[in-house]
Length: 285
Image 1 (tube, rainbow, N blue to C red):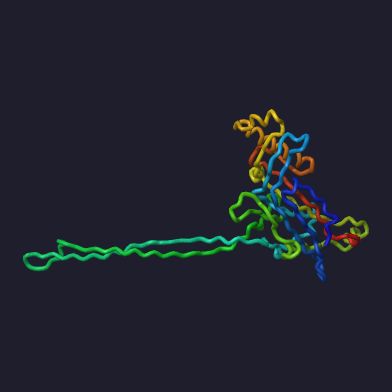
Image 2: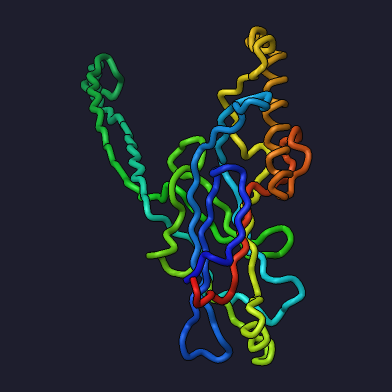
């Protein structure tokens, strides 16, 4: 296992990804097991001497995308080995149901010239109610990664929280303990792998954490300018402050070299973190 060759970019510590490849012995063509986990948390941004705003940001949902090297079709994911998605923490959801029914009983007797008749001169009725209650339990993961495919055709997992909380927090999977996310088949000729060994430049995969603007929960926004802060309570100023926070997010993503579109558009795409993982570890790590 190695983390030395990994190159990481991210929006603060919003989503921190770990990943590596382990070679699988005695396989031809060579195979590698891919291990990965992600830690989510809320992050506080801004508030520095030259920052116009301070705020808290959380991630409500995202897509975790694994991209193989461009133009290298001989490196393939074995689709039979792709993990659906598990988590280390579960929550138990309890549901209660009840039903009530009423049963009626009646009697009638009539007396006529010829004796007893069926007409109802007097009657008596009784009602009984019966209730049935049942409970059921379902164990769900707090964070769920559902196997999917990105719009550009890469293996991905859609990440969501299942316990009703607003934002993603905690550990998704455990790279040290859980099963691999998948196995990678290296179908390249031995000469290619030998050249990589000589140069130390091995094939890499890129992991991206993607989301849309609406997937970011921006709260506790305040402007750092004293004069602006005085009028912040007005609705128009709160909207202005949110736009300033959005612009600050865009600036930070651009500084990291991450892809970002129009942050004022709710369905705009952005990458809030990525990680480059080398296929082969270095022996000097």
